[in-house]
Length: 149
Image (cartoon, rainbow, N blue to C red):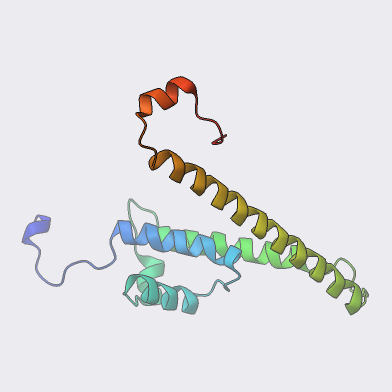
């Protein structure tokens, strides 16, 4: 029986959707979202509109591979490693020292974000100037565009 002759409901969990779900699962540890099947189900329902159950997500195979289950296991391992790495080096470290370290890192993140935003704004302004210039683009390239580098 060919795929066009099959009866019943259309397949909801396609390989393309599974790859999108895998990408979402891979990003969960970096985003600080706990890697659990409940979270995978909830986020896939919210993001893709389908609330597949754990059995479908974990057992469905493409080309002999359980893509979502493999990605889930890898993300779970990464989450464990990250948790172990972020644990304090010394169990006896005082809370004040750890809080100071967190505050320093948060301040560094804020300054880097500000630098990123200013650089992004500068690049967009430079691109806007080029796009809104009424001069022939070939002449601009002959002269060499300055300020975009």
